[in-house]
Length: 490
Ligand SMILES: Cc1cc2nc3c(=O)[nH]c(=O)nc-3n(C[C@H](O)[C@H](O)[C@H](O)COP(=O)(O)OP(=O)(O)OC[C@H]3O[C@@H](n4cnc5c(N)ncnc54)[C@H](O)[C@@H]3O)c2cc1C
Image (cartoon, rainbow, N blue to C red; front, side, top):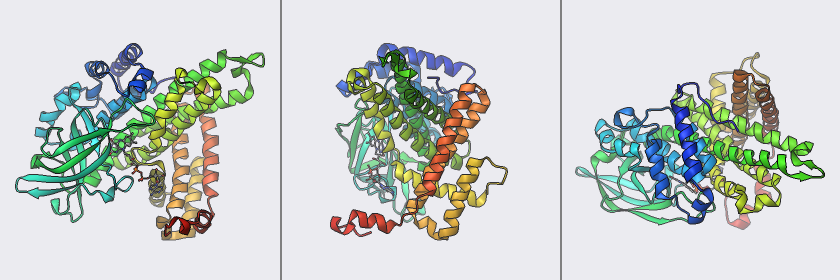
């Protein structure tokens, strides 16, 4: 499959990607990483020597100063070879370092960025807690002022790169700090900080080579200069950091999907049944074409997302990209496995590993159902301020009609109806993906691309119709579930 492309790199990024692919082909063995549940340190060192940990870090501190789009291309290539490697590097470039780069002081930059850029220090990021997963307003890890220091207590869960990170960006509750009654702040934490400890490694379904640990703050004390950005402004900073993280994660989904499609195309071309290659069967052809179309749209949406300069637009696009690409990667990996028949179910083929690896992308960096509800809300507000005119493409008008019907029926109550916002979000991600795929096809004007974009548009149309058909009353679901038997009050 073709790789992600940008217009801006002047060949520098192309060269880096080629070196990265050559290095991975030589040194990265996904099945060995899965079996050992660890990335060999020689691989991490090699990636560091290539400069991959510094791709988006400022040139003044040893990084390459490249864009989010360029970093997406790097992560996509890594994910073709191994998703654990892609997640480890992608997290470092996005969630791990973005906050420091954007909101850090010159002194914080000077202290940490050079080692982060070389890969001598790997970054991690932590919001999730045992009692605060999707609901980030429920953070219980708390930092309070104690003279010139901060006292931190609490527990964090599922921290990627936790076992070997040299710097953690941690979201904590800071009541009263910065004047906000219930505000949150971001802290920069080092593994050697007093009262701080990294917990045991989790055993996972996939992405086994990536480290996932808990963190414990047992009355930890940190100097006050470990605050990142304005105290009490954590939620605003998190929006930007998570936008980067979700975009890079989506690029990783494209890489995993590309690997699976390449395998499916090669296998169906050479495997003969009924006297013909599988790829000569029209049902198989349709499946392959739909996989390529989904992947084409995933890549287009990632690149459209990475190109957003405005923070709010980036946030909205990254919601759509995260959901569309994680669902797409799951769909593509599962279908590619199916097209291999029994071989797909055998670990040697490499597809079972992709299926296991990509599963978590629908959960982490925001569970998809939660993000779809946010996306639906954001689309509703967008249409309220910027109505679609009669000359807009039919798909945009269909989405706007659906949103208007929701609004006219429910008025302001719609904002307290997550299931309807979720339906709107589900339609919106498809429309945004179709828009991006059409723009990409019109840019290249390649007949294959135009056909792929046409397939995506058909699916987007069906997605809008499906979403608009969500009418059943919540009471029906509650009755079908028998909520009272579960002891849950609606
Ligand atoms: C391998 C791995 C790596 C991770 N890395 C990191 C990391 O580096 N840093 C970090 O901070 N976190 C990390 N996480 C945590 C991850 O971001 C959370 O798991 C995720 O945000 C979901 O939270 P939760 O697991 O508590 O699910 P919950 O919030 O308990 O939700 C469970 C499910 O309930 C449903 N649900 C919940 N709320 C809603 C809603 N409002 N509407 C509709 N449905 C809903 C969804 O189906 C959801 O999947 C990682 C997790 C894993 C598995």
